[in-house]
Structures are given as structure tokens and as C-alpha cells.
Image 1 (cartoon, rainbow, N blue to C red):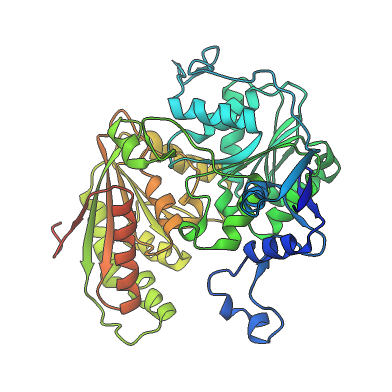
Image 2 (image 1 turned 45 degrees about the horizontal axis):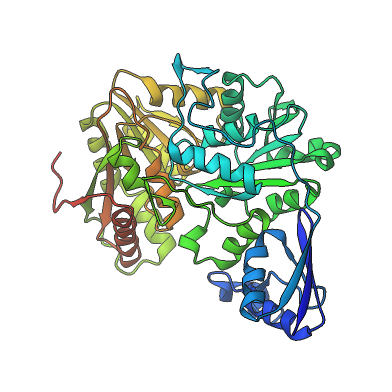
Length: 478
């Protein structure tokens, strides 16, 4: 009978076996081609076969988070194996929490009572010390991260990593509000590391000497944090024993981008399941959270766009002429925004599109990537608590993920078709508020071009799959 030994470190694991065929099988099973790999210049030149390998046939090395996949294969092949676990075990102040864990802290004048799924996620993270927290936007993932950090002993160095300084700042402010005395912040405008530091990965080079001491890393919005830069950071955290990833959509394109999916699992481990009543098969569902009042219900309306005729335009030109600089379409967006009551956010993809809409809606707050944190914070505050009609225009890069606002109306003027992007974008409006019964979501069916029409239908299917009711209008009614 074949035998194997697996040595597991914090970052990588190594499989040693007396049967080379086992390595060959694992190599074949753990290699994937990304979406649209055939467009790669290296593939076209014959210098790359299109595959990303997650198991080395020669050395037996693989990312430690893929241990479940490797063990499942060994069991299937009836291979006897032993495990030598060399991973750092993190010292905890609390090994388990309950719903009243935050009773000693105040937040906005109210005691915090955690939902059952939040308690589940925290306890699983404390028990397994690595994994993926998959929970819908606005379901309270920030409190889960904070609870995990509160369970560490005070001297355990930890990082919350994210892609945007506004999100790092938001997490830092949440830590201060919850009484963290060892909280730090690192981004382009602020360099104040501490025992527990909220940081943008782009700024980690400024604390390079501290990285070997980090024992815990929590990555916020992991789907935005799997490019080469963040992955290089994860590889430097060799002494990091606890590794948690957080997102409503950890796997891009519904998991169809296999290299991205197995990269996330490789660095952080499997998806945590929950026994919450709001879950199906262990996965938390937006529709269930809406039913129990944890998230706002939504009314989704799609309006037709019928001008101009762009039948023969290629995709990029169709986006430019049919969405970004389509005066007919943007006049409709302006009329729609002015017909609505409450706090309204209009999402655009391109800066010229936002400039055009700002010209049509002069009173609108126009926020874009170049704006500093103070400007962004002012707009976010307006979208959280303004009691008068407020219209904001923002690029999707700012509001696709993470930031907390309380909207009455969300207008998607950016189009799009990627599942993770649409779900994240829609989730911006699902937070509950005292002056809000439901989110009014507005989108458009672009009948003017085959590419744009296909993307519109794709958005409808994604939202229907998430459990939202869709109303498709045959004409404008405002």
C-alpha cells in the first residue's frame, strides 16, 4: 500500500511519498486554466500552456489551504498518510463566544447583540484558525472580524488587510469605537502601525521589518485581493498562523475562475459553513436575511434603453456610445434621480460618465478615486444619515465593496455582467435604516446593442438567483 507524509507549514505544505504516481495525479487535479486564457500573449506565442499549477510534481509543494483537497485525493486513492503539523498555534484570550460577547462595549448608544451566524463564524475561525467567511454584503462581517481580534491575547500582532484606504480607515474607526487600545492604521495618508493594524497592502513595504512578527491576518474583501501584489504580501507572512478571508463573493464569476478560486482557498483554506436559520446548505443567503429583517428588502426595476442604434458596434465602443456618453440614456438617469425621494446613489464606471451626469445634476455629490478621505467621508455621511433628498454619483471602484451607507435608492448606470461585481454593487443598498422600508434598485435593459443587451439579461438572472423580485418595464413611467 502506498504511503505519504505531509508536512504543513503556515504558508506551504509538502507531500513526500514512495509512489511518484500520486504526485502526478495531484498535479493533474490541481492545475487550472483561467477564464479567457487564450487571449494571453504568452499563450499565443506558445510560451505558456494556459495552466496555473497548484501542486508541484517535483517537490510535492502546495499551498497549505489546499490540504482538504489533497487529503480527499489520498483517501480516494487509499493512500496511508501521516501529517506533521508545523503551523503556528495562536494564543487566544477567548476560545468561544456567544451572542452577548460585545455587551461590555457600546456602539452608537446601543448594546451589540451578535446574530447566530456571526457567532458561528467567529467560533469556527477561533477553532480552525484559517478559512473563508462568506456572508452577504451588509450582514455584519466587520463585527465578525472585530470579535475575532478581541479574542486574541493583547500582545498578538495582527493585520487587517484591504485594497482601499477608505476601507482601512473604516475598519480602524470601528476598532477605536469598540475600545481597542492597540489599534494602528497604515495607508498612503497615515503611517501609524500598532499591535493590530488596519492596512492597505500597497503600504506594507513601509512596515517590512514588522511582517515576520505578524501572527494573524484577516483580509477584507478577498475577491479584490488576489492580484500579484497582495499574494506577494501573503507569502511574506511566513509566521502567520491564523489566516481568515472575508467577502460576500470570495470567488470571482461564481467560482468559474478556477485559478482565482483555488488561490483564495490555497492561501486561506475552505469556506466556513454556518448552522444559522438564514443559511441553505451551510451558506448564508441574502433572501433569508431579508426575510428575518437583518437586511433590507428590495424592489428591482429595469427600464428599456432604445437609443441610439448601435447594432454593429464592438463592445468597447458600445459601452462608450451606449452608456458612458449616451446623452439620451443619461437624461433618463437624471430624470429618474430627480423623481426619487431620500438618499440616492448613482454608480458609474468611467470618470467622463460621472462628469457628464454631474453636469446634468449640478447639485449631486460627485465622488471619484482622486478625492481624499475627508471628501469621501463627507459623502458617505450624507448617504448614511441625510434627512433631505440627496443624490450622489460615484465610480464603482469606490462603492463596489466594503463601505457602509444607508440608501433609499440605488441606480446602476454602469452596466456590467460579472456576478461578484453585480452582487457587491447591489449590496451597497441593503443595509437597514430607521427611515427606510426597502431599497429601490434601478437598472436598464440596453436594447441598442447585442453585447449590452446580453449583459442586461445577465444582471437580471444574477439578481433573480439571489432571490430578488424583478419588474421589467416596457416604457418609462417617470
